[in-house]
Length: 108
Image (tube, rainbow, N blue to C red):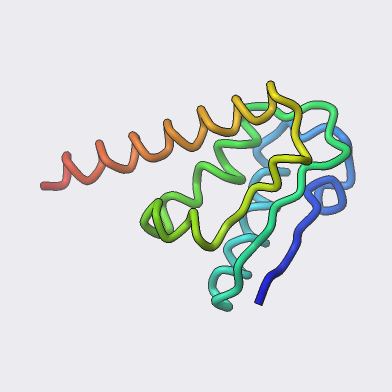
């Protein structure tokens, strides 16, 4: 089942700037993934999105599952983002994948 979450409604602000907000979004996405749902993440109406927020809300998802599986089950609605915001999210996702790979190497 598809579940759409609107970030602005969850954090009740046009400013997605802190880890507390990021944790709130992460927990909602995780809950839906645990129910085997796919999640559409809508960033409409946000004027500011910081890396601190994204690291916790989106980046932390990469600790839950393989990137290929997450890409199938979590969709970032790109039309809800500015070009700058898209680039920031892409950087956070790439950094999260690299961090997870580094942690796996260190465990081996």
